[in-house]
Length: 223
Image (cartoon, rainbow, N blue to C red; front, side, top):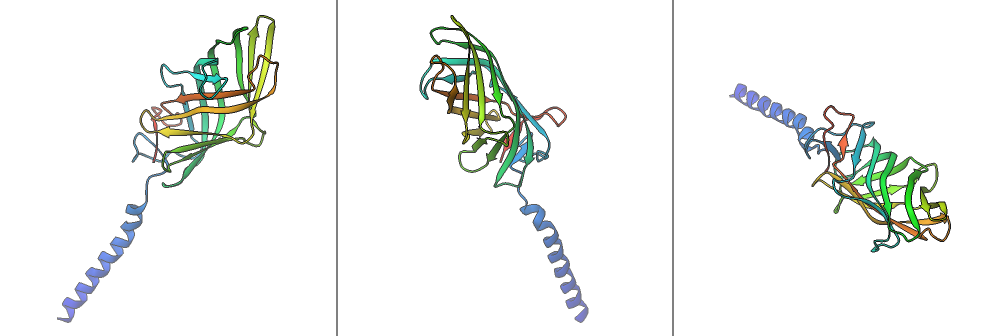
């Protein structure tokens, strides 16, 4: 009888120890950023995330939040490195290192072409949250205000329109298409002639976002 009780107690102790060992692994959630699927491997700190514009879409710089006068670009891309990727729920942090624009046109009267659009004062800090709505916050880095210099060809020669945003812009992510997007985010003119808009409103949706540091460049999910 005593032997049976001893064996039963030992069995219960073993089960308890096994449960204690397994419980943390079962409780651990996926990282905020994963590759391949929401339950896929965590994106590693230091990995490079890249994306082009969603196929068939444009990056735009318009004269108002609801306007259609300004510039649109058929090509744009970015590259960011992951600096933090905790377990969900939470926020991952990325460093936006490059952002480029190309194949741009303008419908502004007096503008004959778009020579270049250059993002300045990189890198920026990109915070990706898995909270409701999957909000994104892109904010200035140590170099100063987020800047964009637009060089336009006009009937009177080329002009430079220099825009800045010192507080940051907001966007969202979506696991449908693995996208990140910004809509009508304002940049204030700090230098340029009257042909430049006083405020340029930036919109663009990039995707799919992929982890180019991993073989096969799998798509990135936000959990």
